[in-house]
Image (cartoon, rainbow, N blue to C red; front, side, top):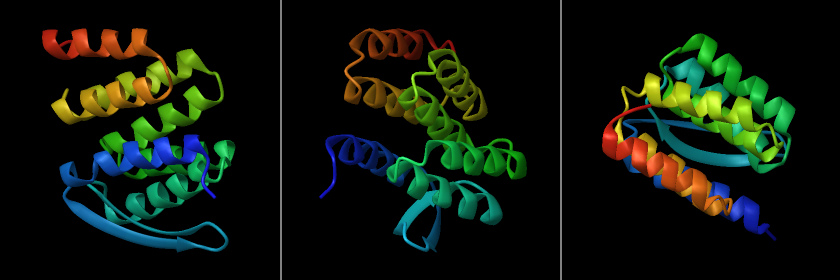
Length: 143
């Protein structure tokens, strides 16, 4: 049975699916299988998917490492920064989370979808203040 947090993280990640052009599929022993379209390079996609599976399994340190490695292989892979920010947020590391989210905004070219993903994330975590702040930045086009 999935916890509420797993459902929320899954829903947020699924919300970004139509916005990302390529598809990568991966299966990791004991973590399951997902099909998650991304814009990352093939090797970075594999690491990203592994990171998402780890994130959903509450393996935060390993998930963060997978996202860092995906970023190293594909520096403009915005979703890897978003998910790394989620890991930091879930561990109570607000400054690191904010930095990763800011980097995602920059790497995406301040794309509208990234703002919406972050607004949805903050709302799912009960942080209306941060969601509102992100909405204001989105309207002003700042990062």
